[in-house]
Image (cartoon, rainbow, N blue to C red; front, side, top):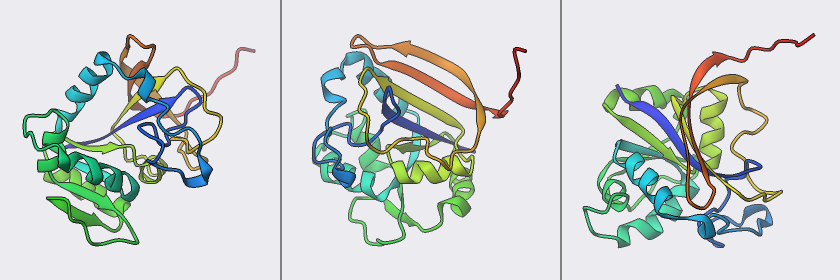
Length: 202
C-alpha cells in the first residue's frame, strides 16, 4: 500500500503561496510571487528529483493542477526527472467546481477525505501531494499525511497562504531526515509521532 506524502516550499514564517513566479497565485493580492527562485540551486534540484522518483501517482489541488498543466506538458522528454513522472503517471485532482481535465491521465476526486485511503490501496510506493494549499489543509485537518517534506527557504514574507492553518490537528512529528542547500534552505522530512504531548519545567 502506498504512502501519502506532501512536499512543499515554505518561507521561514510558513508561507507556501506562489513560490515559483509572480503569476502563480495572486489571490489575496499576494505581492511576493517567485520568492523561492533566487534560492533555487543544484542541491534543491537533487532533492526534488529524488522525491519525484518515488511517485506512483499524484494528488493535487485544482490551482496547483492548473499551474502544473500549463507548464509540464511542454517538456516532452520522458527522462526528465520531474516532467516524466508528472506527464505519465496518474494525477488525481481534488475539486468541487471542475470536472474536465485535459492533461493526460488526470482524474477527478470529489471527496478527498473519503477517497484518500482507496488511492493509497491502488498503489505501492507514494501518492504525492505537491503545493496544493487548500488540499493540504484538508489532509492535515484529517491527519491523512504519512510524511511531510518541507523545503524551508531563508525569507520572511509576512503575508500569504500558510501550510498549517487553524484547522491543523495538534500532533508530534518525528524528524527523519534533514539537510541544507548551498543557498541556505533547510530540508526537513517528518513523520507523525502521535498525539501532542505537553509538560512543565516547574
